[in-house]
Length: 484
Image (cartoon, rainbow, N blue to C red):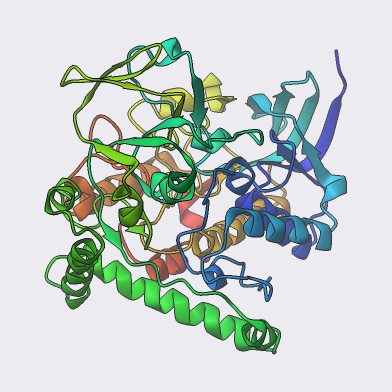
């Protein structure tokens, strides 16, 4: 049997959350940790998402950590390679390479209450023992393929936007895209000019607002290097996005302005009245994640692009057969269908107290106290866990306080000479009931989206504003946790 490697903290995932956890652990004086990353490089979501046109959909100044501003952004909305470069620089600056294992995944994790340690089995057979286990994979981790009959029968090239290979050349080919969310809104304009024919299969149209992008010049980059300027710009954009959150609430000025902007943008971008009608969302603004794009509508209006609104009956060897009986012949089929957000960590067997599996605890949908702690799973912390996603702002604003909360819990265990810490079941239950009650009255309850499980439970979104979340998680409430 392979001997176990012992560390204080095992961190699953080397994306934004994992890097933040590692850096903040160092700053807290905890250097005995190991980052475990299944991909062959640093970046998480931004390593995986290499499809043409991939960008962040919040302003880049707010998509860098408060403790690590980036003066080198080239655009207000940074593209995927730039973001991955920022992450790589962070890892290098903080010397994380020696504490990172790339190209290896956690297959199983089991908590030993007597020892107060997690025992991890990696997919290469190695074993790891850790006092604390931080899962920093977030919800955008496991690619979700569409549940459509015949998908594996397709004889052309089948691709997923979250697993984009480097050798793809779509020039002169007949390409189909399933999905019309944020990913497709970036991918479609990037590939439309060079394909022979582009068929975009739409189930539901989305709300689209203009993207206020611009290139950053030398003056911008010089200013961002001045002490105090980068944090000021970051705070400005955070406040702008918080104002936008008001647009999810009925009767607000923000909502009226956002609706007017979206409708005007659709009219201005689509001269064809029929296409305009096909792209009019049938659900309230904010129920699904809003798309910010200036080139998505024009890409759909191109002569070689066809928006297909008939439902998909099945995938055939030659293409896609729609409900109207037409077969759309394709050379390449791209699934821009996102991630499995309902069953995060489904690819890892995680066993807590009394042999209970995380998959069993989450059978009706993922839930966690403040999105961080799960009852019955001591010394286990989630970053960007259930109900901490956001439809309006940067996830980094949530990651940083989550990391501080988790580290404070770790420090309490050490300070009080205990073996483990876990959220009390009744506290977790009351918290979840309150969350779901708030969410049931929100805009997110009024349509199907990746925010919701099949049973209607909203598993992804935080119901309030960012400031509320930051204040709530700032310091762990001692009475909310039990120690062993």
